[in-house]
Image (cartoon, rainbow over all chains, first blue to last red; front, side, top):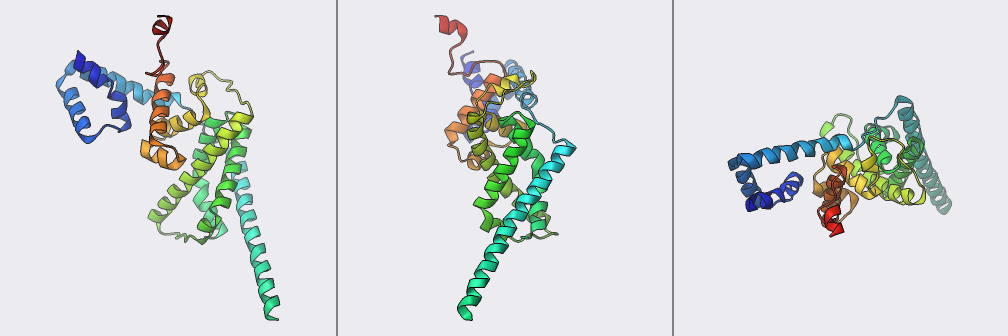
Length: 99
Length: 163
């Protein structure tokens, strides 16, 4: 029972991949050799998988996507426009120096 | 990189960016604005990098890599900006389905979204959001317990609190 508690505390770390290699092997061996703990582990695994459903994954609606895309296009255009303006400014001063 | 290429790189990332933004600010318009602002900030910060990068229409592997890189910078800007904005404007979540999720603080929500919805490993979250390892672990653990309706391991249970 003591061992059950010890390994039960490691379940979350096992899911997050934060156990060291040795600990991971020891944990998997314990699950593989203790059927009652394996059942508890599977229950925790199902809970872990259900977490995805508790986190929103807001789907982008068509009109929102269109609006977002057009705003992004504009931001890109502005970025290039500023760059082009700076380029012509630089070219202008370069020409002034030469003429 | 040309204008067209930059848009091609960014367009497929918009739904995911919007989804993360909505986790930070549960209001459609505010989430949209957050994506635009974070995008502008991200481009301005790394403008020289993106304008000088090559985009090969045929090299799918390089496209995937470039998108991954851009997405990480974008997520960093989104979370930093979104956390600050969430502290300034109150955006209550009106629904019931994700009530427990929206009771957590915005940065924990972002970490939970990356870990549980996108299945990112902890070290990727750590690198993308510029957080310390222990902070990411703490937020993932707290989010796991709070979303399951249990107190985190460090919080006393109601019976323990009474004693």
